[in-house]
Amino acid sequence: MMQFRRDTLLQKISDAGGPWDILIVGGGATGLGAAVDAASRGYKTLLLEQLDFAKGTSSRSTKLVHGGVRYLAQGDIGLVREALYERGLLLKNAPHLAHDESFVIPNYEWWGGPFYTIGLTIYDLLAGRLSLGRSKLISKKETLRRIPGIKSKGLYNGVVYHDGQFDDSRLAVNLAQTCVEQGGVLLNYFRVNGLIKENGKIKGVTATDQETNKEYRIAAKVVVNATGVFVDDLLAMDAPEHKPMVRPSQGVHIVLDRSFMPGEDALMIPKTEDGRVLFAVPWHDKLVVGTTDTPLNEHSIEPVALEEEIEFIIRTASKYLERQPQRKDVLSVFAGLRPLAAPSGDSTKTKEISRSHKLIVSASGLLTMTGGKWTTYRKMSEDIVDKAIEIGGLKPVACATRNLRIHGYQEIADQSNPFFFYGSDQEALLKLIDENKEWAQKINPKAPYICAQVIWAVRNEMARTVEDFLARRIRALFLDARVAIDMAPRVAELMAAELGKDDSWQKAEVERFTKLANGYLLSPYYPQVSDPVYAEAKNNHD
Ligand SMILES: Cc1cc2nc3c(=O)[nH]c(=O)nc-3n(C[C@H](O)[C@H](O)[C@H](O)COP(=O)(O)OP(=O)(O)OC[C@H]3O[C@@H](n4cnc5c(N)ncnc54)[C@H](O)[C@@H]3O)c2cc1C
Image (cartoon, rainbow, N blue to C red; front, side, top):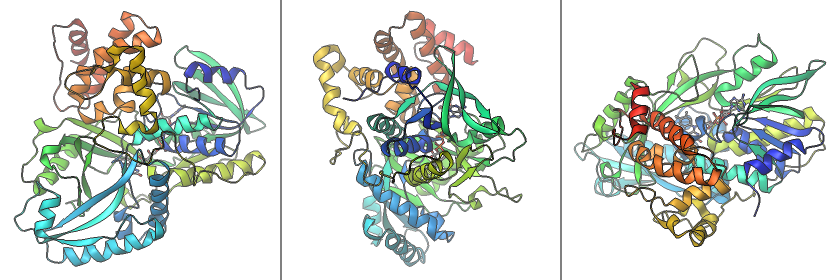
């Protein structure tokens, strides 16, 4: 099995002996995709991520692999066709993580049925032979059967269409593993602080290992800026006076219990009061509802949902659901920032800013990618590496990712199996229990996860902190932040034993995670306040 261990990969930086062909800054969808593409073409590839893989926007999406029905309505046919093609490839190359999902548009207007059936038929046709199935008009009765929980009063009928759904941060981790299998090197908790230049041209980066604070000077033929909403920070390291490329737009989701909409199909509301679409999508054993589109003037790694965004989602969902969600029903709320290409004019309407990606080459040779979406990460990566070959004078090799299976590839993903998202890794994960029978036990009685998953994440998925595990190796923080808080002490204990950490590390990790997870809740939650760890976390929070 390939070695996806931080210490082994770290050693490869010291042993590199000469410049890297392609050095990628940022371990989200864009950077990880580029790293897989570059490594699979045989280039000497290094990716550095300042925190954890997918800690930024790439763990906070709506989890759709889609062409974007909305962009079709805006007439952006090229973008939709490209995304539908990529949707087909992702479902083919990572079937353990991405699957066909049926969406239902309920029509409360007489014209909705024919109107959306025609529009979505065009959507299907654009997918060509990678179509997931034809859209169709369904009766009122069938609509209520497929999405139980929606209001029946005033309902005419529904339109069913197909799109993909996936697990974003699991895909990120599997892409990182795929990159290593292809000969690349990646490190999390490794921050790029500066660019090394000779005669105005970039020759590498200076970076810090965040775990040891050790500084590195790393030489590279091409440096790729794949830092999402942070691209302007790197561009400023290159040329302090540069014009901003990104205008962040915040999107918020709330997570509810499945009992609000217990069917298997997702709900799509095509026109909200602000002219957007809203989704309610079954995800793992919960329902994800969102999203918003709020232009912001600043960016952060832990964006915070605005009160009006939460109110908007609850209000809109309440118009369609028979049982109206209340604030107390929200299990988790998460916000993400879209790295949209900044408009050239003064427009503040982000829904009108193109979602297509943009690749620019600075005078220094820095290659920056912005915009786009998870669905199109592979095509964006292909464009990045094609351009890197040109800039770095690398020997041209054709892209090899169209048919490249992603780590964990397994054709059948039975979602009722609690370990389905590990794909082909399931067997090895469960085998850990032979080493220690205790690892078969649940981490916490309130959730289905077992201790072996923590051990697996540390040994094979480069999880370094309690948050890495609870937020991105499994999705507990996003699915139910209170349960995640309850799990934290046991996770810290298991991780400490694997990583050789002491009690004070465990305590600090639980405290840090509890504080973070409280940011995903609408009202603070501290279990067993008598426990000194929680008491301390609470004091720091107040
Ligand atoms: C609310 C919302 C919903 C979305 N829904 C969907 C969807 O359903 N389907 C879809 O296809 N797309 C969706 N998207 C879009 C998609 O999530 C993004 O396009 C994609 O995740 C962007 O990835 P990225 O790699 O460019 O950025 P990021 O994921 O933000 O990655 C950038 C990384 O760079 C790192 N970094 C920054 N500075 C440095 C440095 N100096 N050194 C090292 N590392 C650094 C950051 O820590 C970060 O991890 C959604 C986006 C949002 C916000």
